[in-house]
Length: 236
Image 1 (cartoon, rainbow, N blue to C red):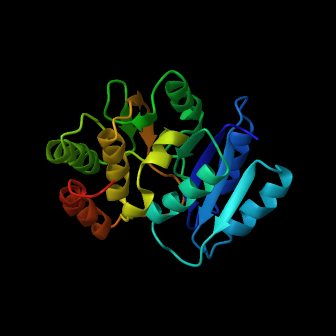
Image 2: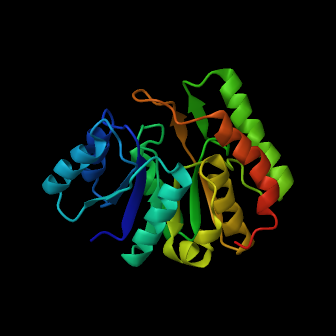
């Protein structure tokens, strides 16, 4: 058993999942994989299950009955991973917008003293490829907005590529974090700050997905825009 588990929520990721698994399984540093699948109709779960037979005790899947949202998938994965006593718990997208090769850099940041490491697009050295300028500006200024409201010194507040030490997730009141989209990512960082954990941003290159459909929607953006005000009074 590795000391590290990477949680990857999936919904219709049949075009990405095998490549993701084979890439992570090829690394010298061992990372186990936990997929949380929301009843993908394209056969994603079945593909994961078949590959799990090829890599026993390295690949796991939790299947849910419907599309319940990114945040609830991660909370489900966090609780599963805490129960299994993994020391380092990652979250990452399946669409290769997050480069799996950066997993070890996030791991090293936590090994070197950080409690939470963030794959950051907006710290020095980070960048975004293949996004239209309008979306880059919207994402960047959303992070500025969050920093102003929550008074946190994190450049990429909506980032979804992260490594937590287990103690961070054991400390945060996970049941209080009910957001589903970007607001979930913001809230988890804010909770870590409020509990005094050490956070380090690691520069990454974010690349827009090549296969499959984006899960972004106006409701997700609205949840984040309004949710930051709610977070200030939440018992995290």
